[in-house]
Structures are given as structure tokens and as C-alpha cells.
Image (cartoon, rainbow, N blue to C red; front, side, top):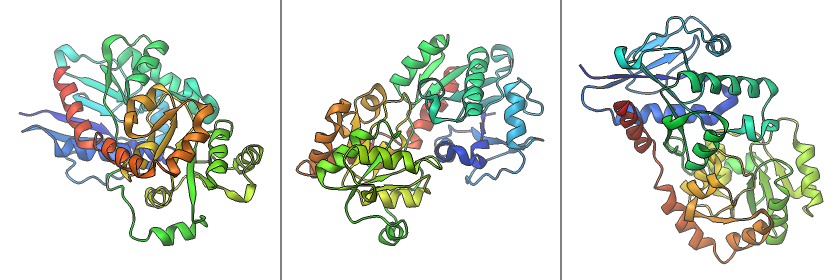
Length: 357
């Protein structure tokens, strides 16, 4: 009888972490597509969750909603979950004592970023406390902690006594991520200019990106801005010499809208050096968009030669280069690098991890 890998899919109803939701769907589909002969993929979900992944086997719906389940698991209470092989694409996992040696019970989790430690101002206080608490449970009870890059693995090892249980398995763009057929219509609906660079980061770090937009003679479109943060981004743009009318602040966009925005950009610029998976940079590379990023461990691991990596003080010059004479070369490099990431490849490595355990 083959193994059954049970995937926690609560992220499908967690609108706060839309990237995690995309990752959960992509990974689950990859696990199904690459399942060894005789093996199957099941799901563990809270009340109210749907499972839009074809090929999922058994679905264990627990007797709690998402919020209640998160609180219970933080306390180490996991009734009704059962044993076997369990993987959660985030720290939202039934991290309790189990017997891997005698019962073959295994629990693994993925930690996508360490913002709760390195950039807590980017999250709510409650979310910071929850993530830190769940990592403590992972240190005690997880058989392996998956991280998306070697830089995150190194930083995690500094924060927690995780030993040799850290495994590096990269992420990938969302399933089906590509240029939509109605790109122009979507950009018009978002009131975007004809020529622009896309920026992501905090208002403070984006100053270098704004200066790059000024130097390149382009507008700036900011994505993933928190609700109510528009004034801070506008002030940062003005301070960097970019008029407020040329700084277009947008919040969380759907995957299709995000693809339309990135597809129309002269370049994508990542100014934040946080240990974690660079979601937007990977999406930009998948669309063949020139990428400029501040030099950091995670960017070196993931972007590598698929873009321009420079110190923050050199970002403005790099934006001019990426949007100008180097654009075609960088488009080719971005596309080539993007081929290194797929959910099928990630899933194969996760199957291998559980086999090794």
C-alpha cells in the first residue's frame, strides 16, 4: 500500500496571505502530478474551506473555522487531525508530539519568510506573535522545516535551534500565471500610465526605486501597498523627486491584474532586503520583465543572474540601465532564470523529503 501525503490547505480561505494560498494550490497540484506509484495526496481543511485542486483524494474537514483552528494549533491542541504524513505550506500546522519512528507519523512545514523577526513593522502585532509562537512549536515538533532559499535557511538557523532539519525547496509562480488576453483593458481599469516601472517594498526602502523612476523618466507603480499607506508612499516619492501624480499606489491585486501590471512595466524593482521568497520578482521573471533588486542573500539565491543585483545606492542607475539599453538582454536572462522554478519540481523534492524521513 502506497503512502498518503496529507496537505493542510487552510490557506485557501486566508485572504491575508494570498501568495501562500497560491503556493498551497500550486504545490498540491504538483504533488498530485508527481506522486510516486501507489501514493496519493489528501487534504486537511478547516470548516468553510474549499479545495479547488483536481485529483485530491480524501478531504478531512476539521470541526473548527480557520481562526479557531489557528488558535488551537498554537496551543498544541489538534483534535481530529490523525497521524500519517502531513505537510503544511505555511506554519499553520498541527505541530504536536508524534512518533515518527514507530508510527511513521511525519509533520513538515514551510516557512516562506522571516518578516515576523526581521521586519515586524510589515505585519500586525497579532500576526507577529502568532508566527513566532508557531515557529517555537515547529522547533519542538516538526520533522523538517522547508524554506525557499539558502539565505532563509541560514537566517532561520540563527533564530532557532533547528539543527539539520532545515530543507531548501524553492517556490514558483502561481499556476497559470501569464499575460492575460485583456491586459490593456485591465491596466486602463487600474488607471495606469503608458510607461512605468513597478516597485515593491516599504516607503523607506522605495526611495531608491523612486529615484530610479525619475532618472529613467518613467512613472512608478507601487504594488502590494498596505491599506491606508498611500500618503506615506506619496511623501516618499515626493522626497525622492518624483511628483505625487506620477506615483501610482495600488494595494493587493488579483493574480491576473498583477500579471497585466507587470507585463506593461519597463522594469520591476525590488528594494526590500528581507529574508524570504521574492514573490513579485519571480513573477516578473516568468513574464520576461527586466528585474532590478537590492543585493541580499535571498535575491542572490533566487534571482541570481536573472536580473541586476546592486547595493541600494546603485538602484537608480540600474533602473536606467534595465529600462534602457540592457532591456532586451535582461528580458532573455529573466525568462531563462524563471525556468528554474516550477511547482512540479518543488513537489518532487517534497516527496523525496518525506521518503528520506
